[in-house]
Length: 310
Image (tube, rainbow, N blue to C red; front, side, top):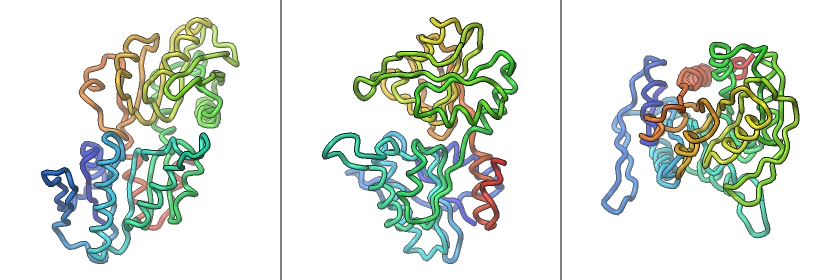
């Protein structure tokens, strides 16, 4: 078993390596002067079980290209099996034709990863579960829910807490966490006028005098979460915080979160924290390194990954 780390999220790769007590394989991943990606695997991987760690976060296309070239290098180096470990799978929000003459980019990216040489994919909280079916190779989709639930049990009284889904599409995710905590569930019905802009319409459930915990998989512009937090406070919630797996936090999202009624936004380290995130007083990161590392160990040992969530 060998680990190769690309450049998008070295802190997470280092944490996974430390958990497994396995040093990184020597690999050179750099750019030519015109930003063309060059990869050289600097040790023998013939017949090895190799895991390549790379989130396809910002800059998405550069990081995706790094992953593809690394996969090709490992395949040509005769690795026995290559697993693409993608903590954050970019393009996941383009999982269907949202309008006439639009692409299904998630399927295109799945084809690229498979063609480049991946034998298996390991990822965390796909935006849409059906993306697993876009790959023609085995795909394991891990869930950050156990990490979130452990943190919630330390922070909140389950009798006062209430899990809230910020939209109808996230109800299954929120219900799973609510059942683990044995607490109530509320749903926010919203209408999205255009991409990146949302309007809260109605709250399904009584949130008065409750500590509301918003659950989502991706926070990008943070408009949805901030609007939801404001609506919950207006409806009588005593406080609002949010747990989101992937902290994309593009543009002015960090400032928007800081100015919102949310007391705290908790994200994971599936995407490397920017400087703005690191210095923010109401954004925290939880690590998914042990979760991913344990899944990698089980894949290498050909044992069950699903029992991680029993």
